[in-house]
Image 1 (cartoon, helix red, strand yellow):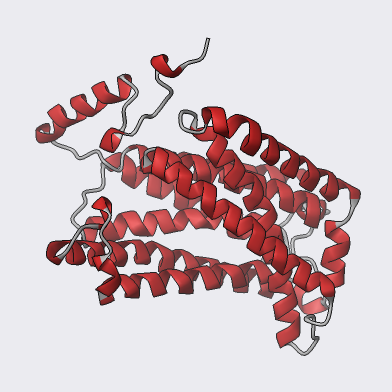
Image 2 (image 1 turned 30 degrees about the horizontal axis):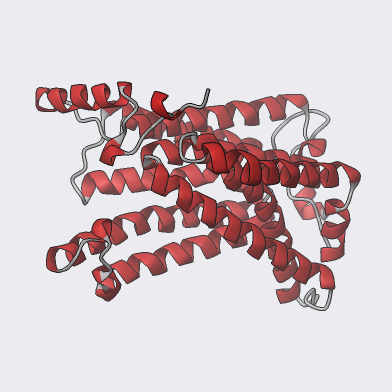
Length: 352
């Protein structure tokens, strides 16, 4: 690490915080921008869907009139910009800093929905937003410094060390068992199998995305990394993992309630990504136990806020909604979620 960055780094010996490195600041700004764009994109796309549904066949019943709606495309482009910013963030900051900040897009989406779409935010939803902000701030202030990498070959060496090879092999083995043994039998009735496959491959895709981001950053700075076969191997891994994620996430969303899928996926994906980053990039080797515990407390705080926000997103204060809430509770007791989607396996479907 250069002297200019060493002066603002965390002193691992004394545990005193002296500031963030320039790379971490760049990654933080890009991650926050990504959350803002992605959070706003949900609102813009929903406005476009409503406008298209008013003059054509709604998307919820199989219509595609939204493809002719400019507002929907604005939302789609906004989301793409957000994903590009998120991709760039991994090139500058460690995954333990970037990944949990994805929860901020949920906050932005909820607040904008409250203001623009008049979807009222319950008081506990406000508390959930506050918890996400507190947890994110805690992680940002105690995140490890990004390690200096001069070539994509260095990332390849990290990815081929025994510890990460063992993790990657274990992830692929578990995913294959889930895909070929458990999902055919229980995929339609147990949400954890679809989400498990998404999260397992997601942790590998983020590591490859980070490797690609570093390669592009070095290439743009004058050190061409596109000549190395390792760069293209990482690109192939990204494409394979992302396609698998999208496939099984779509299956989960089509089978189960979105309000159930989203928080579970966020928790599993973020947890496994942080674990993969700690193993591959050894983020915690540059920190003392106090900083690590503080980061984990921040992460748990974000998880709590995310769960609370999703749990109360359909709740509105006032007596007029009591009957609807009681009816919804009764449906959930019978194992039925919104739109008639089962939340858990029905007794009649259980095998002896």
